[in-house]
Each structure stands twice: as C-alpha cells, then as structure tokens.
Length: 225
Image (cartoon, rainbow, N blue to C red; front, side):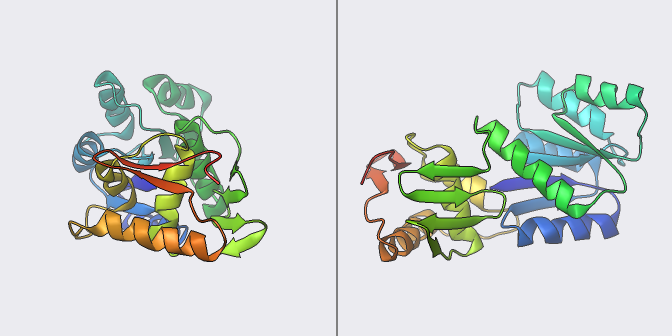
C-alpha cells in the first residue's frame, strides 16, 4: 500500500518515513504543503499523513482542496493543536482522523492501517480468504496456519489483491499502489511481482488463488481453490 507523508519537521518526517517503510508501505514524503497537494492530486494513495502547519499551504487547506476536487483518499491530520474547535475544523474540512503531537509511533501506524482498511470497506485487521489469512496490522501472512514470508513488495501486492478480493486489479493500479515516486519501475515489474508472489503461495500449498484476466489484470478469487 502507498502512503503520502507531508510533514515540515525533517526529523519527524524522517522518523515517520522510516517506520512506515519498515511496516511495508511505499512512501512519498515532502515537507512542503504545495508539493504535498501536487502529490495528492497526481497519485492514488491508500492514506495521507498530513501535518496541519506547513509552508506553502496549510494541511487543512490541502484537505479542503482534495475534497472539493472529489478525491477521497483517507487523511490523517497531525498537529499540535489540541483544542476541540480546531479538531472539529479539521474533521469538517474532510479529514478522516486526527492525531495530536507528540504521539506514539505505534499509534500512528495503527491509525494508518485502520484508514487503509476503511478505504476498502474492511473493518477487521485480519482478512481471511478461504485458508489464506492476512493480518494487515502485524503485516503477516498465513496459509493453513503456516507462515508465508514475503518481502515488502510482495506483501503490498498481496494486501492490495486481498483488500479487493473478487475484483480485477489492473497492472497500472498495482503499480500505483506498491511503488513510491522515487522508485524506478520497469515495464515488467508488476508481472514479475505477481509471478514471485504466486510461487510463494504455491510453495505454501495455495496453488490457484491469483488468476489472470488477459488484457485486464489480476484477481484474487474467493473460493478459487
């Protein structure tokens, strides 16, 4: 899954960026509000972590612009503003959640994961498709109670397909959601990622979970086994 981080404190931005990447997210990060708006309007993010006070454009103004243009990416506002009136202002502007500084990094990660689940209409952290189990909070995968070890790219592909189980997901959509802007993406990158992921699943006994729809994309089929 892909996250946009807009935070002007370089120290905090680096810390959040590191923890998000360690948790398996693809991350685009900037400290400038105007650039953050450009990122958010250019790419399809699974969640946006947005500071309120930013150079170039305030976070709450970015939220208003995104909602006015019809973009519904989930937004978590970060701010030192803790009074009720300002929290209400952020939520009314269109933010989905709110976190006051200072905060525990584990809480931020949990809130981002919850926003991603909400985007795909899933309330539970653990998604089960037949005998496949994906814990989107712990970011671990099991099949028939056996652990399947995936690298971050493989996990992001699988999580996207699981969140959209039963739907065809195009290669372009997969590319948008698993690669950050600073990653050079080769023409066969998605096909290669799907091939490796299929092998990992097959080695665990899941032989036919991911199907190809020629000219359209890939689908993780419920009841495919």
